[in-house]
Image (tube, rainbow over all chains, first blue to last red):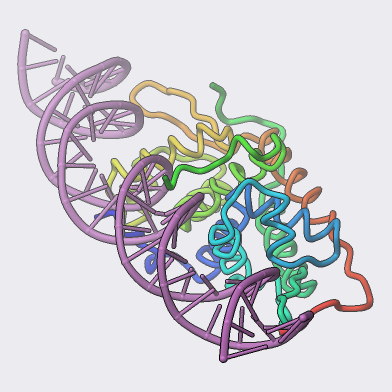
Length: 112
Length: 112
DNA sequence: ACGTTACATCGTAATATTGCGATATGGTGT
DNA sequence: ACACCATATCGCAATATTACGATGTAACGT
């Protein structure tokens, strides 16, 4: 009970759900938008920008990194993060494929 | 703690996160794809199709309905569900806007 | 070597999600 | 009125997520 029955669904359905989960938290959306604006940043930039603890930011970065949507390069003391362009395009494409499956048909079948 | 600090983020960031959350579970992705294929269906169609209890399906439908992505019309005994075309397009557009914020630049700033 | 800075990870608490059985609601057919 | 559908909701248990402070690790400056 409570445990997701993800094994019953297709690989594609699970992949899409996972991609969506990454951007299903406003902090991660905000981090990604910040990263787009600044091209790159380090963890402490985000700690300054957002009202979240360093450990919390670090955890969100870990999630984003796990999904591949960002990448980080160690540069001496710091760790420089940026968008992973390839994965970004992949996720964008997959979401588009999903949303393009539905074509509006003239006759609406239901209403509220 | 553990409570999401959603109040610190913009309306747009929260909206995008909420839209994403709806499709961040494989069962809901599967339900939506089923709904696209069949144009419309009732709850018991889904109960037959997926290895989930009726109450679980009903709950996922509730989530989808809350987000507005589907709508349901009571038809006697049954409740006919289908995609809400308008909301579908809205979510698609919002996600596209988000993903189009990032343009690949030639020089990669980080690597793994 | 020592303190500082940057970041990750651990441990824990609060909260949210997922799932199911049981039960409620409300329309259908008899 | 009654049994029978279809669906919604309630109550609960298992699990996942979010968040933070404390602590660990590793490079830096002195």
